[in-house]
Length: 407
Image (cartoon, rainbow, N blue to C red; front, side, top):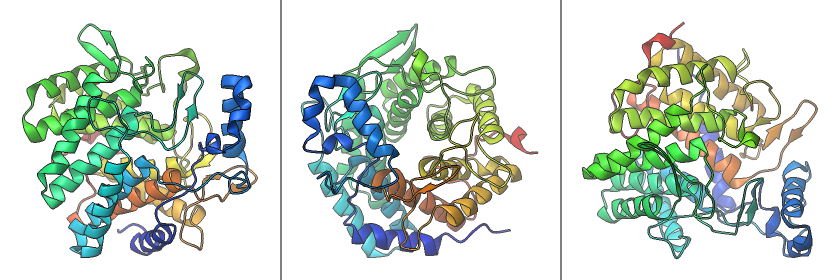
């Protein structure tokens, strides 16, 4: 039985993003307000409060606050992966033109003064752990962009795209700090911190392993294996992962768990590390058992539903699509999440809402957080349908998803 139709909402979303020139606001761009500097005396707390004020407001006050719509490098990377995939699926030249447009802009938006090609967000960002000035490169942003260049390389065949991704491996190896536990290693989130954040670490490992698989670089493969070992060593007994090691990072959410599972899936095949299949099985079971209501509603946290966030919706679709070869249960769950998202989070104008709470829906259209992720998710589904299978790993066609997930 086929799942919900995705082509029509995907086409509407493409038209919306193109009308916006692929630029937009972001949930975390509050510090882009030109007057944000007046909060300098308040330091960290003031920056966090300003970011959260804009993020939590149901009314988009950014234009009134003189915050401008802008290009976000991670959004551009996700758009590049999606349009490259659409060109491979359809042969339509317009998707190639769009892909090259994104490539050119990503080259312009590279962060400077680092060892390799790298990218960061287009806004200052304050977390509870550290402050990152605008365009400070991170392993998360860089991994998604570099993977988009690898997608473009595999689809369009230009060696220069592979060289960009290889350069990004240089950033991971030389610019990021490391926490070591024997042979296991954890890459920091950025060059400016020493945090232990598990999804960030394995995103770096996945990039290294994918480049290693293409180039035959044994050093990259070995270091990637050490980073995977670190993540596996921090898996909780029931299969989950905390966001990070610090006490204030001891929470588990939908989309970061999805990142870990997707990257572990890839690394097991690319390095290869088939000895870790039981860990993957345990993690996927926790994910499927704890992050969804019976009707397919994707929960934000494993132990509570709200806010229902579009990033959780999109990542759930991506992850469940990747693992659909593990059995009918996962395929049915993916289709339920997809149907729920299209029914509840899609605006008549073609864009996707930010969040749905108990009493209200935040209908602000965010370009990176919502539109870019949903375009990536919808094109993944189309790709799976076109291949006649629900597995969509661009790196490998061999299923490593656990058969025991059935039922």
